[in-house]
Length: 191
Image 1 (cartoon, helix red, strand yellow):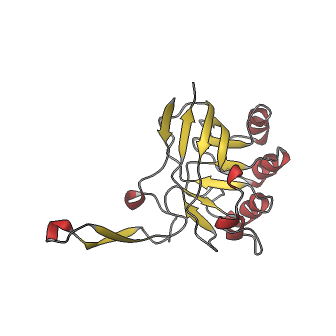
Image 2: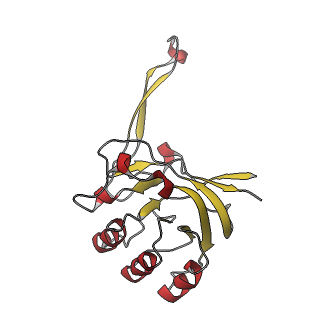
Image 3: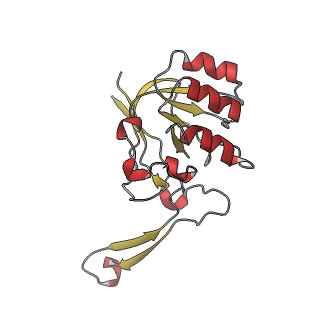
């Protein structure tokens, strides 16, 4: 078995434009004579590799701690695209995919793709960008997917991963009442 860590490092991660950049303070430092090291950190729930819970764009949607973790853990299909896929191209992939799909490459989930994803009743869709939806108009796509409780796994690092079947582990931090959460995303190649 091979484990692919497809998670960004938090303090050097990409952030959505305008979001707070993660930071930390060492409040106890052994280098300064303290008996142990203790770190305090601050970050946005959508920094780096994270997932969106329905509550992010759906008023009465589920918050992070209410998510069905089976949607975040399990068999997964990874498919690379060299350019933005059409709905027809995505539909061909989804015909033979698991219910958790990660799209590698320059993919933005348009409304046409979101409807296709819901047509196949996916549980999770993952992308490399900080937002699965178009940056200039994220509302409609997020509502389409999160309204059907499709987990959006964003900010993945997939350069070492090839097309194929994997076991995904992408459980979020249990942040009660939150609209999103950081994830340590792992893909396990069970071959």
